[in-house]
Structure formats: C-alpha cells, structure tokens
Image 1: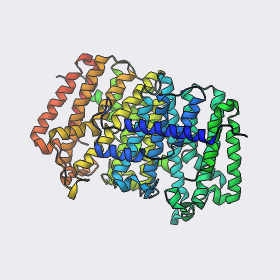
Image 2 (image 1 turned 60 degrees about the vertical axis):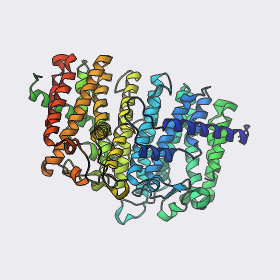
Image 3 (image 1 turned 90 degrees about the vertical axis):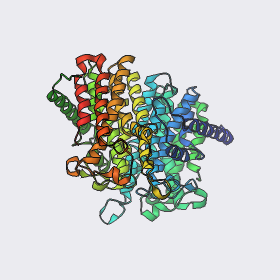
Length: 314
Length: 314
C-alpha cells in the first residue's frame, strides 16, 4: 500500500503529541493536591515525575491522538486520555524493572526508579501512577460526557489487568521458568508466545486505538477497523522488539539487550528464525495499513506509524 | 448518645455484607475472562483469591453498604462498589507487606502473599487488584447511570492515590526514618501524625461513606454529614489500631504487634499517652455518632459501627 503522507509529517505529529503529553504530565504531577487529596508527599511525587517525564517516544499517546483525529477530535481531553494510558505504561515499566521482577538497572539510558530512589518508593510510585491514570479518565476535563469517560475507564482497566498487561507479565515470568521445578524456561510454542505478547504488550496498544475511537464517538465499523489495526501493530511491535533484543546494541537501545536468549525465553524470533520473523513483520505492516482502508488518506499518519513501529531501532 | 439498635443487629448486618462481598469476589475472581480480557493466568488469579477471599471483617464494604441503605438503596450494585473498595484495601495490604515495604510475614494469621507465593506474584496481584477495582466500578452492573459510576471512580482514585492512601504509606515509610540520614525515625508532632493517618487509612474510610452516598443519590447536606462521620471514625480506627499495637498480643491480633514502638514511629498513643488517647477515642465516637443526627434512627447501624471501630480487638 502506498503511503502518501511524508515521514516528516508523521514525525511532526509524533513529536507534537510527545510534547503535549510531557507538558500535561508536568502540570498534573505538581505539588498542589487536587480536590479530595490531602497533600502530595514530595519523595513520591519526585519518583512519579522521574518515571514519567523527560523521555520516551510516547507511541501509545500518539495512537490515541491519531485515532481520535480520524473523527475530527483534537483537544486537551484527548491528550488526557492519551496521558492516562501512558501512566499505565509507565507504572508497568517501573514495576517490571524491580529486582523481584526483571531486575533491570537501566531504562532509557537512566537508572531505573528503584535504583534512583529505592524499591519501596518504586512500588508506591507505580501504584500511584495506576491510580492517577483512572483519576485522569474520570475527571470531567477528559470529556463532558460521563458515558464516554466510563467507557475509557473500562477499556483501560480490561486491557491492563489480569486478562491483559498484568496477566501478560505473569505469563512472561512463568515463561522464564521462574516457578517451574529447577527453574527451567517453559519454551512455549508459537500460540503460547503470541498469546503472552498479545496480553503483555498488545492489549494496551489495542486499547489506545479503542480509546481514541471512544473519544471520537466512532461507529462500530470504525472501531472494528481500528482494533484490527491495533492487533497487527501490536504483533509487529513485539517482533520488532524481539529482533532488537536479538540483534541490538545496548548502547543504542538504552537498555540491556540479549536478555531473552540469556533467559531462554521463547520469542517469535527464536521460534521462527530471524528471516521468517522479518517476513512476518512486513506482512503485519501491510495488514495494519490495510485495516485502515475505510478511513482513506485521513489515516496516513497511522499508516506511517505502522512502518515506524516495525522499523524502530530503540 | 444512646444507641438503640442492638449490637446483635449490627453484627448481623456486618456479617451479611461480609458474606455478600465474599460471594461476589469469589464469582469475579474466576478463571473465565471478561469481555476484553484474553485469559486469566492461574497463578496470578490464585494469588488474588488468596489475598481477597476467606477473611477480614470487611469493614469498608460495610460502611459503603450502610451509607447507601440510608437512602433506601440495597442491591448488588452497591455490593460491587463496596467490593471494589475492598480490592483497593486488599492491594494495599499485599504491597505494604512486601519485604521492601513493611516486610511482614503474617496477615490475618496466614502467610502474607509474597510468602505464600513470591514477591513478583505479590506485586502483580496488587497491581491487578487496583485495576480490577476500577473495572468493577466502570461496569454497568454497578449502576445504570454512567455519571454515578464515574463519580465512584473519581472518589476511589482520589482517596487511594498520591494524595490519599499511597501517599500516606510513603509518609509512613518516611516517619520510620527510612530515607533520613542514619535512618533515624522522624518523630512527627501531632499534626504530622494526624495528617499521615488521615491519608494512609482515613481517606479510604471517608471514601466508603462518600461512595455509599453517591450510589444512594444523597444530597449535599447528607454527603457532608457522612463525610464528617467518616473522618471521625477514621481517626478512631487509627487510635484503636495504635492502642492495639501498643497493648495487643500477636496471637489475638493475627499479625505482629509492638511494631510501631520497635520502629520508633510516632503514633497518637506515643504522643498523647494511653489514657489521653483513650479519652480522645471516646470523644471521636461521640463525634461520629453526632454527625449522623440528620438521619435519625435509620443510622443506628452506623452508630454501632462507630463503637465497634473504637472497641475492635483484631
């Protein structure tokens, strides 16, 4: 499929949303308590700011914003929904990095939250970020219609809980053989691996598109098209990530690489081989772009996004 | 103030709600995924069930249910709101017990979740319980009116995030001197201690009453009265807890006692002395019961609840 929007325009949109999310989170993570709050303890606030500000492509917010824009909606409310998902993504990084989980010391080239602060603060910062995400969605500044706000809340909760992201992290720890006798990795087959990835990273990406559709008052057909796009880029994202882990250099990636192999974890790359994985990645990009057909050229930024997700190098 | 409802009737109401919450959580924490979920990993589900089922007075759900009943509302929707708060309370216990936080091995006489499972599973179970709480509130089974569901969501988020419960746990760790040079406890004064407790345990108790009022479509005057009641029993609850820690026997309490003194933490009991703390506790019960004056005898169960909170022995 031809992509008519320039790569430069895509980058401009990506950067615009990243800046908007950065500014919004900077304002939301301020010392003044909101109505109903008592005070905001400084150390906890600093850890939340450290986790959320100053970095990241903000791919998830970009997906929310671009999905909503298909339906003509572009405002601070959309950005709030986008930033709420980013808070859930951010909490998952903080908790996944903990010594009891993946035990990572670096994230985006900086010490992880539990290294920069301490474990207790990192646990609490993650907890408070989940809670803040739902707070942001529930606030009327996100959308004047309570039915829209509650649909956003349900979408985020379902995609990030036991049946989505948190459950996926559990499966990932199990795949490392963490709880098996002798701690041997449980090398799953392709179906197991796809399901793990659909939960751990895919569900939230699909939710980004769904939430963009919700704030945009999309009809069911448009919602289905965006979900199909979301599932395809979710898989593409994961294959690109696995390729990066298998081939990347730590200095470029900003976090440790080669970890999957070291842990004996199955990935699509280890199951299919690098060349087959690359071919699958290319097919998924086509599939994602094809799913956007009903939107015509309005969806060109999302089409570029699919290519970007597949090509990403960090 | 005289309390006309019998203690037996109060116990009957408390037990009824506890049973209702137990049954509801047992049904919600089942292996079948909800729409929008993929699968529910068994180990994570078991840890959530272990954390949530088979114990506890269910004081917080009781407060939600009794507040809603003042306005004639008694149904499964109220119980869902009540169980959602219980999930947030439950997650806070799981995370607070972690080695990096309070490092507790016993909870209600059973091994804590990270002892019965492992730390990673305990962290994820807590995360998934927060998320489930918001999922439950957002589902239309809780209330047909989206505006009611979103008001519940906001109340729970504000009371349990950085400006409420999670922030209170942060202050509590700081009060132990965890982050001070030489790790000395920071002995706060009465105002500091009251604020810490208002955040760590009080905010959620006030939210219970607020959420009962929201599902009951209470007017502002009734909401104010219930909040005043909530603040008074919140303080009473904490003084009773501190007295229990100072005087209790571990076998009876089902968790370690004497921990506040061992950690050098300020409590109202250490600041005021046992006798003055007891007098304050008694005054707070009167204050709580007095706040219920607008509701007349309909609020007798909540009046008994205030006495129960002050007298609790476990």
